[in-house]
Image 1 (tube, rainbow, N blue to C red):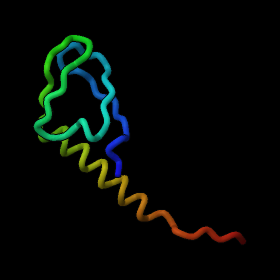
Image 2 (image 1 turned 60 degrees about the vertical axis):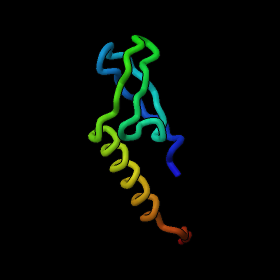
Image 3 (image 1 turned 180 degrees about the horizontal axis):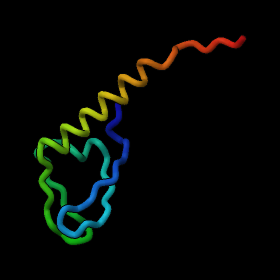
Image 4 (image 1 turned 90 degrees about the vertical axis):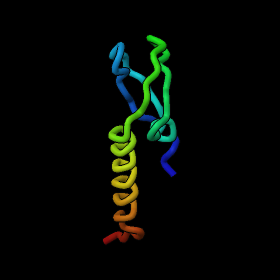
Length: 71
C-alpha cells in the first residue's frame, strides 16, 4: 500500500542524502550509494523503523472519519 512512498536516508559512509522508497528499505537488503559506491546493508533497526512508521500511517488513515457532515 505504501511501498512507493519515498524517504530520505543518509549514507553512513559519505553522509550524502539518498532517497529510497519504503519497498527498497527492507531488512537484509543491500543498497549501493550512488555517490560513494559503498554498499549499505540495512539492519533490522532501519526496516523495523520503516515498518513501525507504515503501521502508524495505516492506523492514522483508519481513524479518519469516513463521513463528513456539514452543519
